[in-house]
Amino acid sequence: MTETEIRKGLAGVVVDETAISKVNPETNSLLYRGYPVQELAATQSFEAVAYLLWHGELPTPEQLEEFERTERGWRPLDARTLALLDTMPVGAHPMDIVRTVVSQLGTFDESLHLPGGWTNRDYDFGRALYLFAQLPTVVAAVQRRRRGLEPIPPRADLDYSRNFLWMTFGELPSEAAVDVFRVSMVLYAEHSFNASTFTARVIASTTSDLYSAVVGAIGALKGPLHGGANEAVMHIFDEIGTASEVVPWLDRALAEKRKIMGFGHRVYKKGDSRVPTMKAALDVLLEESGDMQLAELYAGLEREFVERKGIYPNLDYPSGPAYRLLGFDTEIFTPLFIASRVTGWTAHVMEQAASNALIRPLSAYNGVDERHV
Image 1 (cartoon, rainbow, N blue to C red):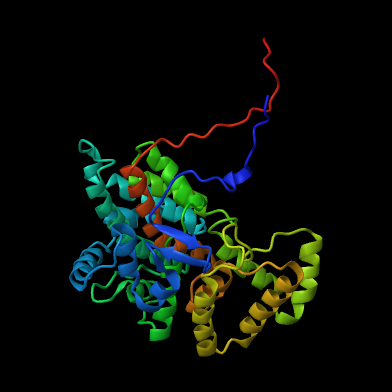
Image 2 (cartoon, rainbow, N blue to C red; image 1 turned 180 degrees about the horizontal axis):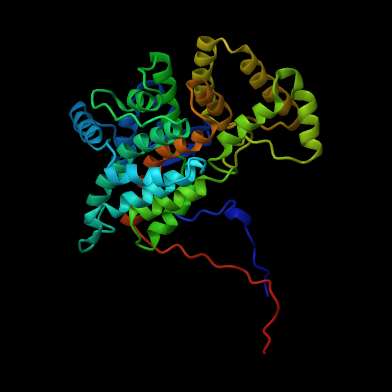
């Protein structure tokens, strides 16, 4: 009998096709619907990128105007959502709070109760845009609540990135801050069959609803081996303290066989193609803030780790410090990831529904042989 080959973590297993994104091995570039992500980050609003992921093409000016008008109208939170936020412990992890709120948002959607409502793609485009509009208001309210502050209502006269920062901090951000935040949202929006996206597709393959798929994806994203890595990067920076402590800290960490978050990626073997764009955005904030201690710590850990292990930073390494400099609490970093990646998740849910097959892999049993009571 031929021994079954086990691919732990589904490494190297191709389970389906997708037209949403890919990593081009020739250029080591992440493509959204064929466009290199660094070009999108340099030229497009996050709203336009969301439209691209959902519809396959960049919007015309008229399509973008309609998209933005709808999104801005769906930003305010329902009074029931604000009440739900007040019931949850202030010290709860923001990922748990956001996951719970998304689940509640699904209960408001009366179209789910219509015949075929769960899987109707026309409804799903609206549901995706609804979550896209609601999540910044939720995440901003969660950070303010952690700081003992009241939520700030959204402003319909501000674009996505300006409004997000306005609701979080209560003041209009600098143009540099807006652009750095926009770049981060574009870079995090989509990445093929990563753990959270695959979770969403598995749930969608059962013909469950889009909200359930997103709730499951949030649960997968919470883990530090996936979305929680950007939080873990800043915990490492806080633990090291200063650039002068990088070498002794890394000596201890490697001796203890600790996993150093922010480095390495299963897909990228020549370094994460998104890092140069995000690092350039981080450099703008470092120059604006004058935080040389953070800049030196960042450079020192990267240099030392690459020299020793030959493993390069991933997107979480520059995004964590950037979010810190923008003023976000470390525990809010992964909810920011949700606000971005919900675009990719929902694109995949709709793609899965359009050509569905229940995702149900096999397993190789290694327990005791058949026995009887």
